[in-house]
Amino acid sequence: MIAIHSNDKVDYEFVVPEKRRRQQKNALGVNVGENDFLSFRDGDAHGSYLLVNFIDFCIIGNKMLHTLENRWPTKIQPSRDAFHKFLSLRYVSSARTLKMLLGEPEECPNGWVRYAWRAYDEKSLDKITKMGMWKGSNSDNQEAWHGTKFECLYKTMVDGNLCEVDEPGRRIKDGIPGIYMMSTKRREKAEWYSRYVCLNDDEIWVRLVWELVTDRHDSVKSGNDQWIGRARSTKLVALRAQTIPTSELESSAEVQLAWDAGLEFQPIHAPMLQKGAGKGKAPVPPSPPTGVTVDHDMGLSGTGS
Figure (tube, rainbow, N blue to C red):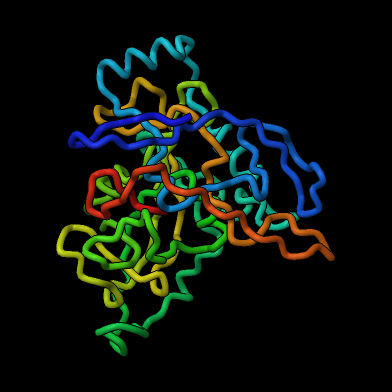
């Protein structure tokens, strides 16, 4: 389904996410796992950096809050069950899921939970900057924050890092590629680059932010309060997830009413490959909405990861 929204008297087409039941399959096409709205089916995900900028969403205001109250009149206690199920239904290998890449949840204020990235090892950080203008100097490793879209999570976790590839739809300021992030002082701004998603059609919302460490001596000048790091010197430290009910949504927050695994990024390698199976080709991302040209500095662009 397509929705039309106008910006400065120009019409743009947005893809409306729809609940789609998915039956998981392995590389041989055999059904495995659950047939569920939160399942992922290899080869049936068509997300791209351009597409995620044109997924339909709503902005919270009094009128929208009233609409959401009527949509979900029955209130429930916020739970992370849907998010944990989401992680458990996405495979990194035939025996490992995304959930296994993360540590146990650590409770934080305001509905946030921290999941340590198990692969992160502080001792492995470079002590000397290896590239860039400060090559050969002592590294300046600092904490940073990166708001991310749900559709990008699976691919990022399979890759084990954020990427800085320059593709249509990426948020590239002034043609400067890199990983865009915020300092700890401006963490709240990073949170606003994320988007709340209702995973389970139950008025419970989840949004995601990556906790990072980056070498500030291997970075690019942004000209504003953002940091632009390089993938080679930026590491995942933890995934932060906030789970809240509709009543706690802030004014002007962006919300996505439904989860649609068809709009998710396909991981680079096919999950659950079987011994002896050939290497399948990744699906070709769909064409962008018709009549759309993305200006990287326009308000519609997102973080792209």
